[in-house]
Length: 224
Length: 224
DNA sequence: GCTAATTATATTGTCGACAATATTGTCGAC
DNA sequence: GTCGACAATATTGTCGACAATATAATTAGC
Image (cartoon, rainbow over all chains, first blue to last red; front, side, top):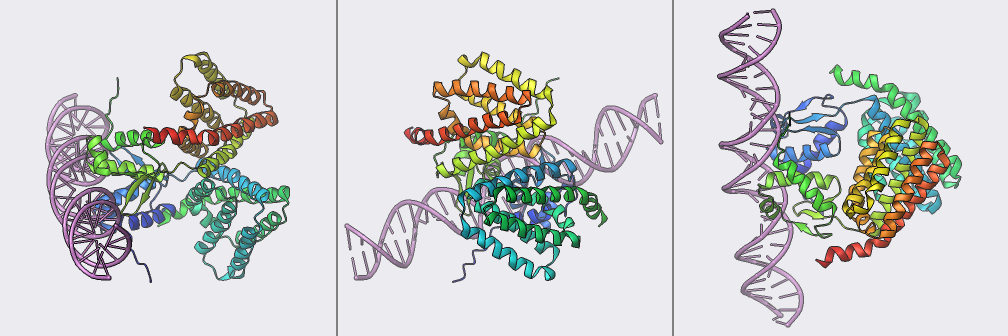
């Protein structure tokens, strides 16, 4: 039986607003008007505030007492920090994974990525970003540490926008695909040093590119 | 001029409830009654819910649709995960710090800890835990990465309770003090490898001890 | 007596109203 | 015209009431 359980207003507001915050449909520093959002999503302020509170705790929005909620800034410094932590956490993940050596999970990741590659040409940019995020999350999950996965999901939400801009460049889509293949193969092979090296290179490159496309991102945000 | 700016109900509720959640004044899995909390803190449900929402996003509470907010569980698995990530993040911090080599900040940490040691005998357990957390946070701050600091603060909140239990043992208070001294000296000396080694040892020991005292912690929670 | 369906109660989810505060607009002094 | 004080407006913060849902108590059937 299909379990419909329609979600609450607060829940759907959270999802909608989270998506908007992630993708900078709000402009950096912009003040969000609760009444307006309530009208837009056809509900009262209470569930809206609930969602806004959660999002500000996640850092996707900023809250200031008696002033309300604002869109977060998009700054070099922040992107750099996120990428740095991401590197620490993902390297930790594969080290841990290689030690534990759960081949099953790894094979699934390889299969998953092979399937993505097969349909890569027909994927929209958003879809590819989603699969990219998923690939890295699967690596993290293989390390069997809930906290690590949660943190990386958090980081993904914050980097989603710049990643999206970055993967609009065809060359980098290609690069992502091949590098992922290399990484997963080295992990499966149990070559800790090689795997680390390739992952590090992949993530540092990705960080550089994120910073590089940041101006494009800002332009995009303010262009419409 | 003293700026008093008395905080809002939501804010004070957040602080109070956060402290209770951190220290397991609620029992693991316990359901929190919003009306009761509102009565206890002398306010309406709105600011209470606001605080509870934030806390559940932080993972200090758990939220289930239409059932409300519950105290988080206290599990071996969770503690282990937290300690593992903490290790990754703190090691990353000192690596980064040693490279950047901001001697000033490091000297301040050394001074801070020297002062803590001086008054160690007269400190309550909670105070020592606070200073312990602060020492590690200062190391993280020296690495100049906001995200890292936020994540470690998050982890601290989750580990606070077991740390408190652990530092009730005199021998371990002593151990903490001397190990911190060693670590900061190696970092200041710029001995990356040594510093890493000592920090790793310190944190892995600390993780083992956290797991070891967990039964004591549970007993404490359920004894009163 | 035990289980399942039904009813009663308690609790969360949402709303609209008002209070507290911040922001904007207006006026007058210079 | 510019600045500051004051008034007008808009926005957030909090409340109490009610609706929707979950939990507990009660009854009916066996």
